[in-house]
Image (cartoon, rainbow, N blue to C red; front, side, top):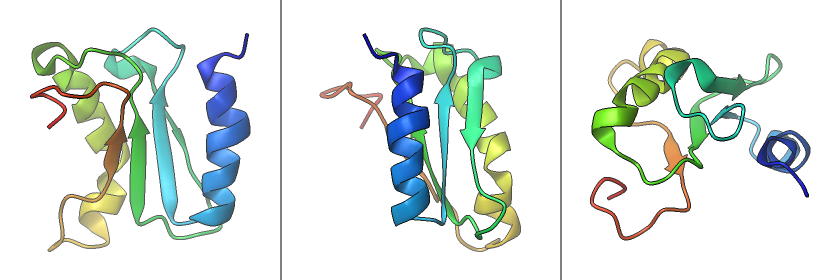
Length: 105
């Protein structure tokens, strides 16, 4: 069985690195954790990062429980969302398999 972190390392990150080089990806590692200390980043030093995708595979999303994790994502992407473009906000996306949820909307 393939672990989700292997999919990030061997499929998602290489594809994003090659096809959309200005993106950083974030995920929780190890799989099953969703606390702020589990957030890891994949980024580049050789290209300007201007956007990010946070793969959040822990569901359901409960903002009262996971808000600290989303705050950690904001910390790890501050250079993208604030420093380079101070007048523009809202860079980034969250990718989750949960659907039809008020919190996801």
